Amino acid sequence: MTWIKYNNEQRIELLKNKYVQNCTAKHIIFTKECKDKSIKLLKQNYSTKEIFKKLWFPDYITNSSIPAKSLNRWKKTLKENWITELKKWRTKKEKIDFNNMTKDEELEYLRAKVAYLEELEKMFKNWFP
Image (cartoon, rainbow, N blue to C red; front, side):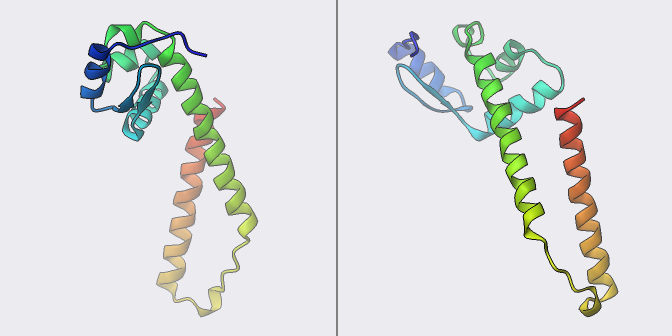
């Protein structure tokens, strides 16, 4: 249960921020763009307060526990989403018939697979340094 109550002026100020989707007296809903940018900045070793200052949030937000709690929650859901995508990819067991493919189609397929695996490798390096 949150004890934070935002008054009307604070809510209006928060709604002017392009990274806020909606705001009530008790809750702030951040945009997807805000979540993506903040996670990228976190990977660049910015502190949670610095990240929210860079995203133009006022001091009563940056000095509260909201940045740390939000970023921890967003990181957790990001990891869970990637893990479920990995599981789906593994369980599909695609049966590719290379005999009916042209050389160009085969090469395109293999390049796409390598790019996907490289992207997964980058994600795992960030999760488990």
